[in-house]
Length: 252
Image (cartoon, rainbow, N blue to C red; front, side):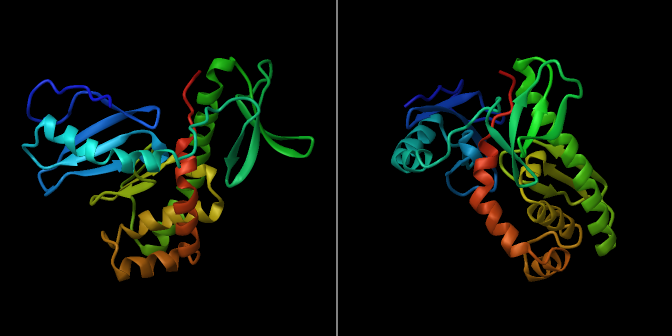
């Protein structure tokens, strides 16, 4: 087990950078103190990108270490089931609106990232330096997300008679979207890899929170009115979301 020591015996927020070794992988570890927590909880971030331990105030580093040790078997069992974290590179396929597109690198071509076909197969043709290809593809997905999601936000906010204060796009690992109490909607741009029905569901879900800041019956009734395929889309995201979160878009 790799566990970097805390600087002090008691946890503080934010905590130092930590790591933990599981099934041959060294994963980032975040320890978060929450005043409302009554017990220690452990979760694996989507895509297997890290571990998070939430603790009540006053928990010592040694207690956290023992807690993780007791759950080492549980962690290893789940980590080995997770998909590998493939880096975006020429030759692999990245979905766009649910359709796999092969990544093709043409350094001399202009246009950044171009959607095209090669031998009848959907492709994303990426220009420029090979080292920046993953980031270029990620930036392309962000632009596509901004375009599609803003149209869907406008559609669904008109339907519910509420306005969003702002719409933001992030690469979040803990959730696909969120809605704050003052009406700020946030979305993971990775949702552009999902089918259109799933993209629509995510926007409908967060817009429904503009009226219902809960997950009660009235919320789900409104969500299904905005997106009749809510149940199907929820199930798809539960099955496939981890794989989408696992794809790495960092420059190589």
